[in-house]
View 1 (cartoon, rainbow, N blue to C red):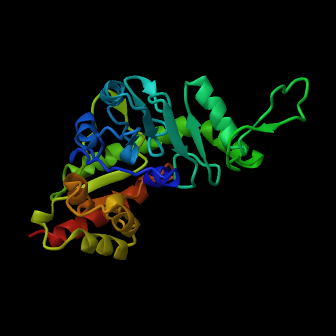
View 2: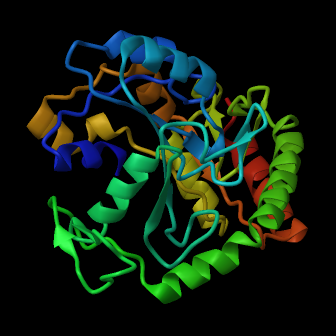
View 3: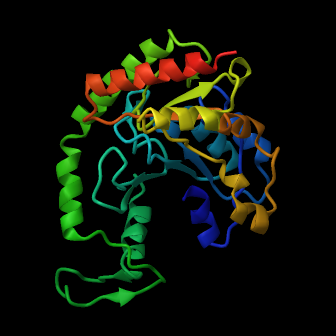
Length: 297
């Protein structure tokens, strides 16, 4: 979705690599692909951990490009005491059912730029504005091309209700992640992603990387074995630059983002959701231990 947003506007998405320990973009990775044609930097808060927005903001200011946060995974998190949603010029959230809170479908954008906020309100409503909403509330003028992107009222009501529960749900995700951390510390051949200081991880995903050199099979075999045990593990994600659409239309290729590509062959997302019980999680941990031990070299 992040790259597609650029394509819709006939821009060319340029893919930066990630830090291999966190799978987050940093200023060094952005600098490596910067050119005079760069128009914006979009940082993805993978798995729920906010990027280093101080460093990214400094880089963006120096390079004179706007900073956009794809914060779809990190709602409920924070960085240097600031809540996610206030860390970039534009902060984008998903309200898809699998995210931290939902409206059934749709999304949210936050910004502290009043002019940009007004333009976004027009954009979601066909490009219409009301020149005098008090004296002539029936009169609207289209001043630019927009889309029909309005959330329905009942979807907005659902999201508003869920927002009141977000802190509780984030606390529970944090508790579950801590239990996974303790379990993974005792298991060979896998390691969780690094969590950096001065931020609160929202734990949309709990991702581990397999140490494949210590296993007799590849990641896909581990996934299949865990699923055979009834554990709903998933893989997040195949790198976008290796998707057929981007390889065909934009000439992206294997080897372009080596850290992301290596991680993509090793990552597994373990089940994690606020309604998950301790017994549920114990089942995951026991199955993980069984499968890993079976395939150890």
